[in-house]
Image (cartoon, rainbow, N blue to C red; front, side):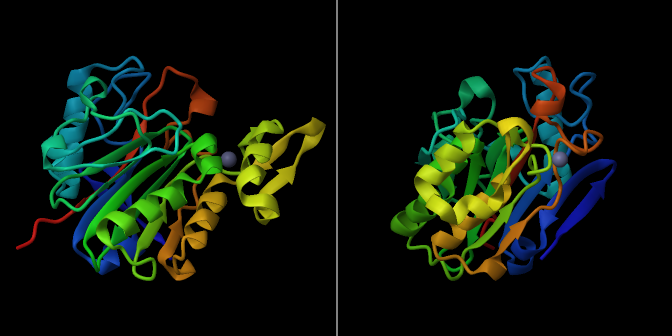
Length: 273
Ligand SMILES: [Zn+2]
């Protein structure tokens, strides 16, 4: 259970070994390293609405495509709204990647179309990639604390099962770098929202801090949702890095504010030979 760092001409991204081992897909969790964007988005940035130009962002996508073998000109995203909405993407959604082009308000996407990379954005929030090698479908989830509390991870799994016949016993999942419990200090609203759905089962991932604050482990709570959906714990990988603790490698909204870049998680089924 591990992640592997890749450095392709200075562009650095991670892959989840459990996803790579099955074959039939390409995927990546990006860092801030190896793109063309200037400060404050230096240098591998995928947000075009935080002070960077569309041209730089497009070039970063192109470089990522070169590095990963993903055809990023066909990639698609959604307008992320911290919801629990799941959308199915089809061939006609290919290429709808920049903010103004994205077809949906949603925070999770699923597809069974080969060669259609699904992209989710984050700068502290959890990103989750899903793959069922048996029925050949993939998913990508953006889960901030609201989506995490709402159980978007489980809702996406259920949609994957109902739409494509995905089998929880064969689905592989990877939760990418995001803010850790070390740095995600919250008021009572966050634990309250999580306990409203998961009851006491989430308590071991919520630690009472100083002055009435809490520290919440969003990655582990999303993992719990995936296990509630029937996934084999051996098939769920959790990236160890906290984005706020490592500003030299990741974008972090909590550390950097709004003027900063953003990273993505991306997954696509390979074209069948
Ligand atoms: Zn941290």
